[in-house]
Length: 84
Image (cartoon, rainbow, N blue to C red):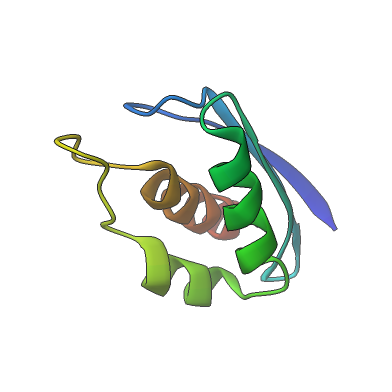
């Protein structure tokens, strides 16, 4: 299992920490932001593949922002999977 840390841009949380077990998403944690909602995202994607999470969450926006916490997670996972 490999641990990753992703510095976000354009959202409230400053960091996303997560593990990849091959291409399986584990232990997603956001630093900052809406604690309850972000814990829920982590629970919902636990055990999913990078491609599943990316397909589900990429392009999601927050208000008038061009991105969101979910979109940043999708980007972070794809970036990490590309480095693995």
